[in-house]
Image (cartoon, rainbow, N blue to C red; front, side, top):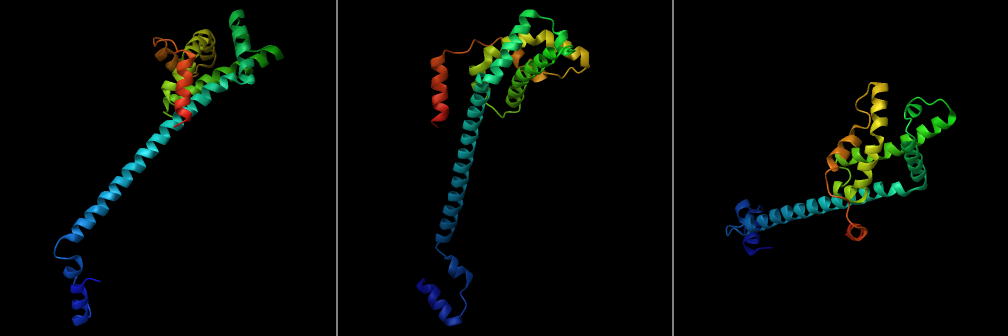
Amino acid sequence: MDKSIMDLTSRTGVAEPTTILGMDGSSVLIAGAIFLSAIMGAGIALFTIGHQRMISRKKTAYNLAYTLRRPTLQKSERVFLDRCVKGRWRRIVKPKTSDDRRQKQEIANYLNHFEWACVAMRQNIVDEGVLKAVIGDTLVKRYSAARPLIHLIRTETGDDEIFEHFEHVARKWKDYPKIPSRNVLRTAWHQVTNT
């Protein structure tokens, strides 16, 4: 204990606040250092949280795009592309046979995957740059192929919001340059997974 505090408390039994805080201003410096440390700690914590969120958004975008390689979605893609060649979208909107109903479900699964990816991107849940690099060209082409079906569904249901996010992103991305080479994508993925 400081000698001045001991002397003061021994005489009166109670230390005076001015003596405890110190007249030389050292307590003000200590308080300032504590405050500055707290501000720096909060800044570092906010930076770390923001950085982790960015990494999470990039990983989520890559994982979402990677699901297009799953066998179930590849099967749905084949059904979609086959129907694109044949046309006859009305039988998908209003199926008559069990095969038409099965194809309708496959096509809905496939197009919904793009819609969900676009919703996640527009809600800032996934990183647009990664999503664009991985599936940008495919998304634009699939929207272009599905546009007659989407128009027919909207006409039949009277709901203009069906696949609105898919449409918005495809229109936004259609004028962007094509996706980069695979080496660029591998490098981007390596950076995301090793941060």
